[in-house]
Image (cartoon, rainbow, N blue to C red; front, side):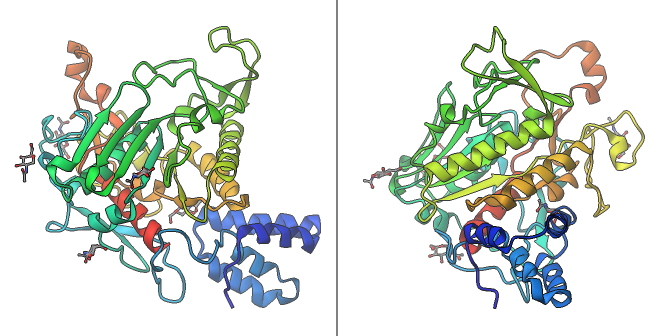
Length: 431
Ligand SMILES: *[C@@H]1O[C@H](CO)[C@@H](O)[C@H](O)[C@H]1NC(C)=O
Ligand SMILES: *[C@@H]1O[C@H](CO)[C@@H](O)[C@H](O)[C@H]1NC(C)=O
Ligand SMILES: *[C@@H]1O[C@H](CO)[C@@H](O)[C@H](O)[C@H]1NC(C)=O
Ligand SMILES: *[C@@H]1O[C@H](CO)[C@@H](O)[C@H](O)[C@H]1NC(C)=O
Ligand SMILES: *[C@@H]1O[C@H](CO)[C@@H](O)[C@H](O)[C@H]1NC(C)=O
């Protein structure tokens, strides 16, 4: 009964159905509602079906996001007891013996910005949590299985420094099963870093493109530009470097958060002159990038052989009043997570999540969504805080007030981002 169909046929079915505008709005609302509020999709659709069987709309809803029968790399499904398991809906459980999946000192590749223990972090609790979905258990991360799947292939993370962290996490999860003489890491000072497992002829890569589109922040080293500008329609500039990749993992979010609007450069002019610059609301600018990303995937990836993932927004913990603590604090000195299951954090993420939900749902290409925002939002304990290599000496004023220079954006490794990769592993093999 629940025969999966491609979302392409969903869209055309929708068109054929010639919905009245009112009905269409209702349908859209239903879709958005379930996306935003995490309603059990099938159940919601099922209830609607009972009420309104004649219109056949409910099946259409249910098929939204339904994908071709078997995705590349998939070997099974995660059963959530009467439907697919939503691995992103769950809770953190303490796991002293099973976590972390590796020790910080066992992974020589982690950047000094993320090696919190070496940089003096006194507590370790943040390493000992395992994500437990409500409806199923995550499969154990199997490095050999991952490398076998990547034999003769490339896995590439494309995006900002948070995706770079996930890249290092993935390398740390995999490298221990590769013999010393077979592995190498090449960090070049351009945009691309590559870990190679020669015995598998497999590459795991990171490509710096914080907006995915071309921008004035694309220099992999010198990119702290206060007046950020993105060039419209420019995804091919970076996209040239993603062609031929077998598994792509995109992210982009933080760099768009420059206020309520984002500057967009129209045409071919230089970023420095910045003529022909228009301002879009952050949501509209972000939507433009999503559409470009999806179109690029459609034009350049053979989705019968390859997979594309998109990682949702990585939350920051900059303001202690967000979680009901005394104002003036941030993630500094936080060693426990936020207990409120409904905690969401700053509001601007909602608008972006909505754009993401809409664009991925409407799209005809199957991009697998790694919805890590909610599960990460509880983890105010997992940031690097002050335990990272500082590139510039700190002033006496800063040293006297650690909150002022605490990094509440990035995450310690091992830590939270290993879970993101466990989820990537789960969605790659068990859809
Ligand atoms: C992401 O996951 C959270 C937690 O399960 C859920 O509330 C939210 O609706 C999901 N977002 C999307 C766009 O699927
Ligand atoms: C990991 O995957 C490999 C290759 O598929 C398999 O041979 C091995 O049994 C798996 N290990 C575990 C613990 O499941
Ligand atoms: C090694 O992998 C690359 C893709 O990363 C592929 O193009 C090449 O053919 C592979 N070489 C061998 C000998 O399998
Ligand atoms: C691999 O290299 C690491 C770091 O250089 C070293 O500690 C380890 O002993 C080596 N392992 C083998 C089996 O040679
Ligand atoms: C860190 O937090 C604890 C309470 O959780 C508090 O007792 C301690 O004074 C704080 N330390 C610093 C340096 O702020």
